[in-house]
Image 1 (tube, rainbow, N blue to C red):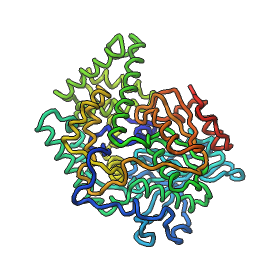
Image 2 (cartoon, rainbow, N blue to C red; image 1 turned 90 degrees about the vertical axis):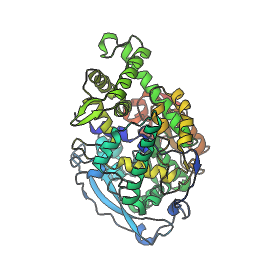
Image 3 (cartoon, rainbow, N blue to C red; image 1 turned 45 degrees about the vertical axis):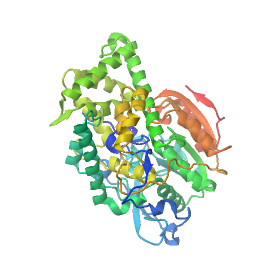
Image 4 (cartoon, helix red, strand yellow; image 1 turned 180 degrees about the horizontal axis):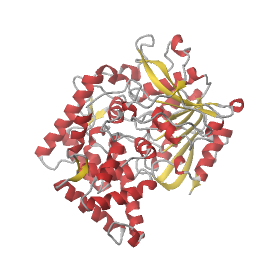
Length: 533
């Protein structure tokens, strides 16, 4: 089955791929540890440290090539509406901002030029989250959705450092990842726990071996500094910005570092900057459970039109839980020689909850799995895991871990993880255990993290439109209010969307899009507290 680019892009826009215990680097437990280095570029440099040569560099734009494997592969981006072509380039940035004249790395950029050059406002820079999403590969997938904004903006995105073509982090190879994803991510006994912990150690060892010198410098603070250098090189006095999911955290850190450089900015699907990683993971457990409950209720309410048995949402959920229990004991045929395991089925369910548009695929996949075919659920899991049809993985998972672990200071021991599991099970009978074990994702990482929670206070910044979606599974609704409060008085402007799925703008809700377009194109700030249904 072919997964749509939109589903892949939506799946990548999660706060963090914490649904995969392999990738679930989170705060919590004690920090530090022997053999870990401090990420010098993350905390010691001035926010404006760069060289004159880098600040004055000229970008060489040309038609975009096909995405490489690290970006997800595929064909060159289709022309924009009207026939304009996407252009790509590279920008040099310091590896370490504490040494602005030292080693540089290249960041991959993409641009769709504004249609009305006479009324052009500037560049509108997108970050689609993850962390780990390739902006160069993702922006064209949504080109039509943002075409109104292209009326007066150059649409610009990039692969953040460590992602895709921007010195992409390398960890396990394709065969190793296939084997790792087949393993049980919710161990039930000491033997399975040992296998789980050893798998984590082996994975981290490959990251250190393949990308060790770059790992201290891939954190969010450096990505924010890169965006300010990008603003300068693009020729903009202010950074006009559209951040989605983790992109809201990146945008908040940018606003904190450069409040006087913030232009018109939108945060959609908002990360809660007040929660440490254990609290964030618990919030995600609740968010995904809410989306799962809504999916099950919708199915039950449709009666015989739903392929799954159950007269109520609770009965549908019980049936799905029984199916997953059977898969734990006996996996079924999936795709090729890969089986659908309980873990991969859970990943597939989570993947489909990112958008209400993919609920029919989830329903079909569960029905087919009950009949002995796990192909569709496995394809949904592949979309979240970054695996293409030819068996090759992009680097979104490796980048996700590296960025999270460079950011997050605290680490969980096995004992601390097991002690946290009851709270996770209570938060989500479906996803709690899965997310709870994900707390160990940064345990043993060779770089110390920068913070427990990011500082996003931005006094003096221009207004930032902050959008929360009441049914968002990955970035729960409460995060929007917390972001508004932390940005500071007169900065955050809250807008609520009563809907389903991860994010609001791409739901195509006319009220949300009208508010966003009105601000970005005309500078009209909506009233804080506006509600769209």
